[in-house]
Structures are given as structure tokens and as C-alpha cells.
Amino acid sequence: MYKRFFWLVLICTFHGFGLFAQDLTTDTLWCQLGEDRVAVVTYFKPGNSLAFIHVHENEVTSLAAGKLMLARYGGKLVTLQHSKGHEKQRNIVFNYQKKKFQIDPNRIFTDDPKMLASNIKLVKGKGQIPEVVQEMVKNFATDIWQQIRNYNLIVALHNNKNEPASYKRYWLFWFKQEPASYSIMSYIKSFGHSSESNLSCSDIYINPTFNNSDFFIVTHRQDFELLAKSACSVVLQNQNPVDDGSLSVYALKNNRRYINSEAKHGSLSEQVELLTTLFNVSNY
Image 1 (tube, one colour):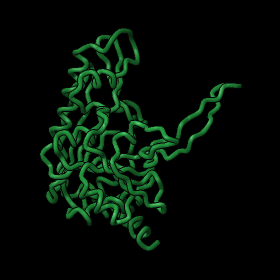
Image 2: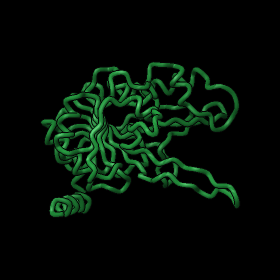
Image 3: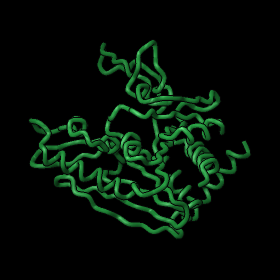
């Protein structure tokens, strides 16, 4: 209880006095996607040789946690800004030749052209995904990767909803079953059936006292062992994961040390505590 209170006070202090901006260098790279632009914003503070990457703009809790850790330990934080309204969006929407396309920015890191094409959605207009659009998205992914590829450790920052499976009413007599949202349980084989997440998992440790939203995904056995010994829920990605375009798979293929930090939306103190544990056990 004392530890949680300490972190809440510390977080409020940072927000109240604007210490996030202290000693931080900020840079913006504008990337063109069709007729629209995406800002790749970088925050830097001298210190540790690690990079935080935040690709889903609506996952604001993880971004706040990353900024807090950056201010404390130093390093680099890269985030994307693309939402056009007041509400921040997860996916990026862009226009090209009177057609509208949509991408999940964590599903564009792949050298497989078929996978990349399948992850670009046509939301307005007809036809196939033009090769020129695929090339735009590929170049955009390369621009992001170039910002973090030379760092000793890449820490991805994410949030999830933590909602159980449910039936939702969509019309008077029409109900639709909604599956449970993404969590560490997604990596466990269920009723003899493997999911895509489960097929990419080689080991897992679950702390039963933790919320199943709050966990790490790692690409190196050493990081798995260190975090498990520290009682953090953690998933070890196997050496031949399903290539779904995610950054974790791409980092492994490029022999980069990668750790994904997951936490429930709004659970800022929990995510900060997990990231602090990561720093303590990984010599950062």
C-alpha cells in the first residue's frame, strides 16, 4: 500500500510541475501517407541506452508511464501523432486517390509483402490495395524502425481493455458474442485449441495476484527468467513466431532485444511499478 501511495504522489508531482519537459530534447519527423501526414515524435534525455516505442496513440496510459520513466532514467521515447479530432485513435487512416485506407501501426513491420498487404484495410473505395500504397506503408515502418534500431533495448508501451467475454445487444433481438479482450490469457491454449498468440509463445509465467492485463512479452530467455524471478507475469516469444507484422516479431528477426510492457487502460501506477521492476532487474 505504501509503495502504491508513493508512486501516486510521484506521478502527481510530475504532472503538477511539468517535470516531464525538463532536460528533454524533442524532435518531429513528418511521414507522408498518401495525402496525409503522421508525426513521429521523439523525446530524448541523456542517460540509458534504451528506446521506448509507443505506436498506438489512444493508449495514453502507457505513454504517460513511458514519459515518467524517461524523465527518471533517460533514453529515448518515440510516439506517433495522427488523430484528426479530439479523440485519439489506435489506427491510422489516410487518403490516396479518392480512396481511404487504414492500418494498425503495430502490424506493418514485416518483410512479407502478402502479410503487409493483408494488414492494409480499404475502408472507402473499391479494388485491391495498390502497390504504391503498400510501398508507402513499408517506408513508414522503416522510418519508425530507424528511430529505434540501434538501441541496446527496445521497450514497447501498450495498454489493453481487460474485458471478459460477453454478449452484446446490437438490435432488438440480435446479440453478438464478443470474445475476451487481449490479455496474458491469450497465450494459453484454450480447450485444446491454439490461438495465433499461443503459437508464438514458448514459455509463460503468471503471477496469480496480478491483473491479467499487466504483463511483459520478451524475446530473450534471460529477460524472461529475470522478470519471472521478480514475480512479474511474463510471456517468452518463441524463436519462430507467427509473422503478423508486429514489432515484437520484427525485432526478433533483426536480433534486437525487445520487451513489450502491457497494462490495463488507466492503470498508470501499475505500469510504472512494472517498468521500474524491469529497470531494476535488467541493469537499466
